[in-house]
Length: 455
Image (cartoon, rainbow, N blue to C red; front, side):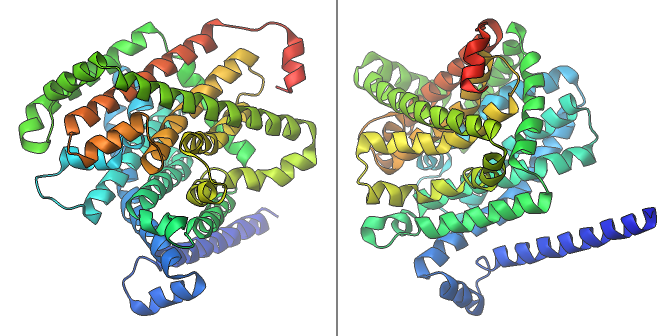
């Protein structure tokens, strides 16, 4: 009986590996420059959709694996010291989102030499860094708080690395190749890429054999362990690491960057002395609050229905998995079709970006107190919301921190743009600390509220 079971298991593994190989080969078709392969893609899609999927696939396949490997190597070097591991985790929790919270044109202007043109290599490096930071964070969290060996940790983080690579690749695709995504100049490719990403996400989850509930519960078991380990002294280590990074930036600025910490701080003081910047901050924060309120209420309603009705839970699982990335691709066309204005555009982006993190957090934190559950869920969705309004203001806006960074990059005011980025990172870090303090110190005792909300 055991031999038959082992034979069946091996048979399933062979089938799974064959399917994964077929998926990888199919996904790499858009990457190769052969006209025969590209013509097949164009016949299946259309010229613009083929170019968008090709660019997305190129960024993802040629950057995510390299970034993931670099993140794992970095994680293994940090794990030699328990104190350094904790400090690095606390720092990476914020820093891993830096590539998403800075306008990519500003990042290019910071690192580009005079007259340098944007290249695919720079974009691949940008994607690799984004994936590497997220992979390092998850790898350290799984190894240190999960208590597993490196082989088991690799299996647990591979999905996160793939999704983060797809996420940053999609955002760059939409903004770098904006002419393909704009419905105003043609049909737009958003719906086609949305379907493509939905298929990829569902296939990845199918191959891994993981459901939405399984992923949410297991991830938040680790995130709660990280949260419980935090205290006031947790800020000391990350602060020292940031000062070290600032010192390195100051030393290397004349050789590698077009701006230094000194010039950025000078621009920051000028921004704070004026009144226009406070208006930009107010616009972005209002967009963030409105969008997260919409997605948070919608996520709470979905979780309530999933907890009450088993059939809803089963039917909604694949739809929720798709919500992680696919709707983002449809945003440009949705904004055009429904004539979404400047102010509502970023709110829509925030709501779409933060829906899945809210769903994941509300599901994984089941059994926690209402206040803790809401505060930690908001903290988990916060970086997605900040990335969303930066993306939305870069794409379609007349005010906001993201809009200010975009204009600064376009007018070669790198110091001013970096000052806005510093403020955004400080706001993100401050809001995260406040939400974690609320989750730790504020409680709502009446059980009626908990049962009424279905939490």
